[in-house]
Length: 308
Ligand code: 13P
Ligand code: SF4
Image (cartoon, rainbow, N blue to C red; front, side, top):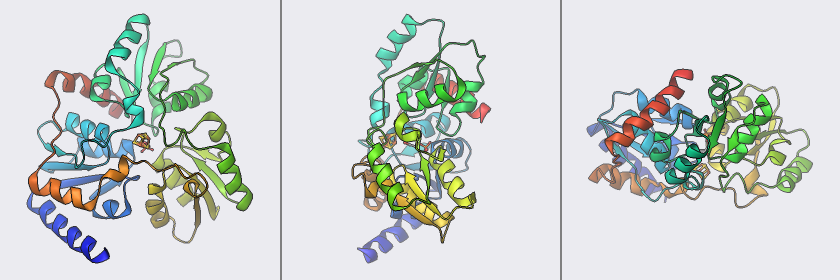
């Protein structure tokens, strides 16, 4: 296995150079996938990198909404997504037609959408956000401005609590983070009472309430790295353990996946060295987006990038 991974990595390196292809990977992908990426990041950093690079081609090691965002921002580049079925329960929870109807029902509301949405939903959105910049994005509107927040009700509720706003929340959730139970965090805390609890805000409010820090994957990594504490309970998808252990060597990390077995994103894990190699070799599957939809979606993503 190790030997075949080594060979695949070499072949991917070679093809990547030949084709001037940039490989972008999310922290939730497999360790060996993160190892061959040119850049690994959270949703915000990946969108920023997709908007600003010198490559001829982008291969997205992540899920479909991320690859779509890259294509929206780099329309002249070929964007490859090794597995088109790599979806996202949060993005899937929000249909464009349903959102259109909600907008008609509340015509005086602006729409803020988490980037975990389809390109069609982004095209109906005023400003996108990620878990890194959601507070800044929502804070960029007047206090009086009414807002529809899609699609993550947990993240939206978290922002409502922090800002005192009353945004209308789409009833979507990430099946991975929403499945984390209070009991599983408390069990780990009982085992490691000195550990700080770091939680992704896609988790339910009662789980976020147990956090010493709540923030995006990058926020969690940075907190662990810069904190004086030595031990941390990591309440997000376990793929992040690879980067966190690299960034903060010597510290001790306990992943929630140890006591809450369903906390793994099957969509992120669909990307493998094998399908990355095949995608690079054949230059497919390619992400294609209708130009009118792309232009409308670009506005809401660029609005976000202007803010942060
Ligand atoms: P971030 O990368 O912004 O923390 O989001 C987590 C996530 O669920 C991505 O799908
Ligand atoms: Fe979507 Fe959740 Fe997977 Fe992220 S972890 S891609 S939000 S299903």
